[in-house]
Image (tube, rainbow, N blue to C red; front, side):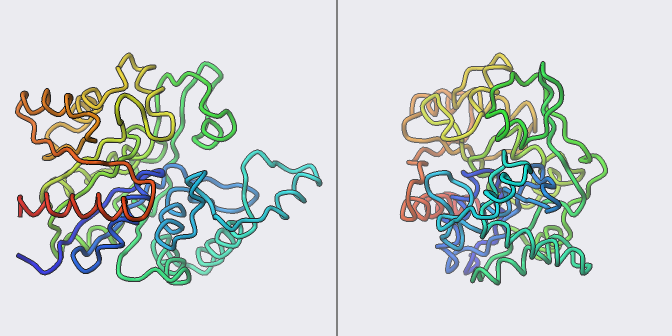
Length: 320
């Protein structure tokens, strides 16, 4: 047994960021690479905003706003207020400290550094050490939601329209041309013991990663793939997942989530992780021959985040 497990964590949305913080508390046991969803990235006021990547950066540096689940906890809003006073767009809330991050990202990209290199630079500036944070691709991927009101990019749907329009389908612009992040491939070439799919929306947070050509094949060959449910007792912890499932004619349950992942990515997942409140669903899945691990998956504080990551590590060790 290796002294530390080499693990890839797919992190999208708040759930992925919280679990990344859990693994950050286990660096004596795990050598993680956190692969972030770049499908939410967009340009606003001339700045490249990378919400899921920044949520991971803020979660690992313990500066994330615990109430909103994104942005900075010690934020101020002077720039946004002035933008609004001058008649500019204020629907997307960029705080002053958040803007500083985007300015530094833009400066690094303009100097010719890759998005992964810039992300590493920002992590170092925030005092994050011992793990890699890598956007899933260097190429642009944009999540577009088709609705009766027309096509909406993710932020327009999520923030601007507060997830109100019915979603008819999800389109991932640029994903067929995108390539896996070189840092991911380099990490995996040196050996990878397991892959963790964080408790993230499969349509909006995981698909923009998994639909990149070659990603699924690379991850599936690395070791056991573990998927943590974002559905607990018939409800999504945060975000529009339950609504999206209902609009697709599915029940918002852990079993439906498993079935949907199996339909989207047949044979990918080796172990399903369900919350203890879904024990009955776990028994049904086990009756089908699925391997299921049940534990408390809620992560409301750092202790719970580390506890969940620790339980996942112990369960993965049964495979390797």
